[in-house]
Amino acid sequence: MRSKKSAAKNLVYRSKIAAVLHQTAQDFHRAGVMSKRSMREFDESCLTPIRHFKPKDIEALRKREEASQAVFALHLGLSTNLISQWERGEKKPSGASLKLLTLVDKNGLDFVA
Image 1 (cartoon, rainbow, N blue to C red):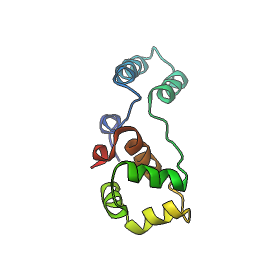
Image 2 (spheres, rainbow, N blue to C red; image 1 turned 45 degrees about the horizontal axis):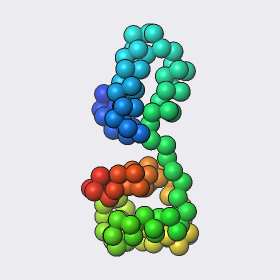
Image 3 (cartoon, rainbow, N blue to C red; image 1 turned 90 degrees about the horizontal axis):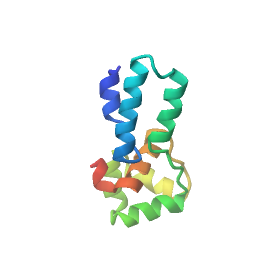
């Protein structure tokens, strides 16, 4: 199980300002000044939303990053076959894979390398 501190380090924010505001809100929540519900709503507004990708979007993202399916898969820690299946629409990314694709879309492939 990850500690709350290590989990917080892995958060991806919409902007640097959102990161600072979120940290302040977390401090308020820990101090009992902000309710759990308000903190949850604040989380949703500050954190990068997960985007859902269509097969053509995944291929376009990979090509934008000038990566072959093999290189793209290597950076994401996935198999080349899975990338190919996503691009053909045979399978759909979900969970952590969607988060990785969203991060690559926002920050570039080197961000997850």
